[in-house]
Amino acid sequence: MDDLDFLVFTHLFKEAYEKCFGHAIKNPMTETESKIFCNKILERTGLSIGWKSVKNYSFVITDATSGKQENPSVATLDTLARYVLDAPYTTEIQRKDNESHYPYWFLYREKFPKPTNKQAHFKWVLGFGVIVAGIVIIIISIIYFKFIVTPKSSQFTDDFTHTDETSIANNGWLIRSKDTSYWKRRGETPGQLTLFTLKGDNWPDPTWKPNIKNLLLRQVTSDCFTAEVHIKNFIPQQEWQQAGILLLEDTGFTGKSIRMSLAFNDNFGGNKMPSEIYVQVITALGNGFGKPEELAHKPLFSPDSIRINPQQMKNLQNSALRIEKHGNKFRFLYSGGINDNGAFREVVTREFDMKPRYIGIFAIKGFTNSDNVPVRFKFFRITNDACE
Image 1 (cartoon, helix red, strand yellow):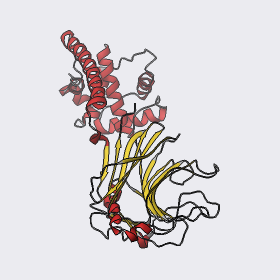
Image 2 (cartoon, rainbow, N blue to C red):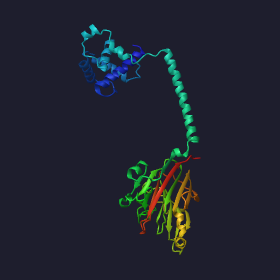
Image 3 (cartoon, rainbow, N blue to C red):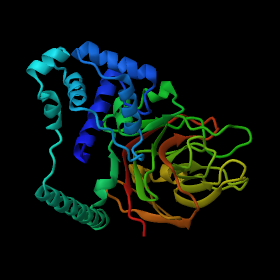
Image 4 (cartoon, rainbow, N blue to C red):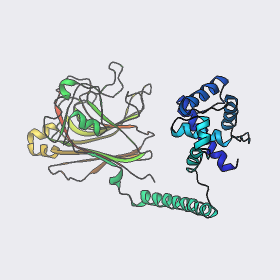
């Protein structure tokens, strides 16, 4: 039996075995398996094969490293082929009289044509061509993704046109600590997502467990990114009311975090100062690392001045917060004004050793008893940037 015939026989035997037992052959057959196999073939074809021969075949076929080959008779090969191909039932006498040329073996064998030298040469050339083409594709892909693909191709944007549960989930948002009574009011203003400054905070506190209700989170997929959120007509006016962007290492507030928010403040450590609306940036190292650090405290104006000059309120018609991260360098920017296209201005740039896994938008009032006021988010975007 030449190499091609042995290869065909191996395939034929494995196919017959799987047809009989319903799974691929992995180990040499036992005596019992061999007898079951031969009986099944006899029932289907009317022809017999010796179970000892079958057992020997299985040893050779399951041990490709042995280098041994069996030489089954053409009659045995034809019987196996008849079983695999569902040939009509016959007997040894009938086959000898009518099909002594063993047609089913040669019919099965035709599925494995012997390659000519020309075909072999063509396959070698084709294989070499495939390798070269693969290398070219890889090089082009690297150039394309590194130098040609625009940020839009790795960008997520949500304008909150749809705020139903399905749309939010399909956009990749996770909702943490859902407060049903306020969450169901998220679509009160069409085209915007409405959250409320509910009691909660991610600030470590010995009295209260960190928690932010109706916190929307999504996974961060790049070490370098630009994220921004736009807020409509949010004017915090009571103790600790705020809203903005939150970066987290985990969803349980145990790791490092960065919070950037538009907030209200009237606590100055006992000093008498006018209350203020300001932009704040705070970092925390997680559980067991003590107090957070305030990276930025940028006053915008005082609510007292709003009462004197109500026109200042228009500066909060369109507020936006942006965080740019490149490696350990974080840049924080703020934009506000009557128009939606106001320019961003830098609040602070600092280095902080953190790789956020989640980014979220939130509204809180700390653990105070101030009012639950609405915060209307109208736009969110995060863009994966190229790391230098």
